[in-house]
Length: 68
Image (cartoon, rainbow, N blue to C red; front, side, top):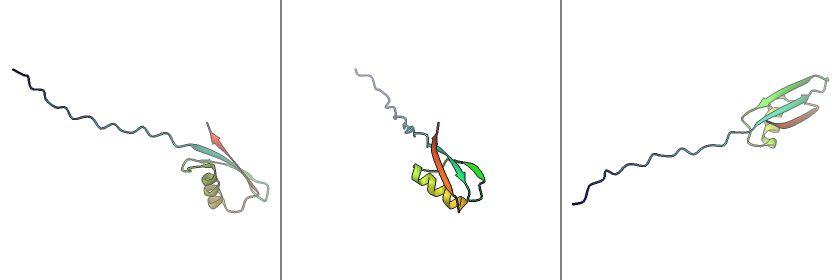
């Protein structure tokens, strides 16, 4: 006589999503003021730059780096 086994439903495995990169932007305004921005919703350096410039407007220079 064979024993019956109860079928177990496999648990759905949640895909581990890689953490989104965070960027830091150093801004220099035309009048000489400076500011730092932390960008969390950007997909790339180019996207982070676009986000900062669209938020701030007229800038003399922008330097963006990946935050560790």
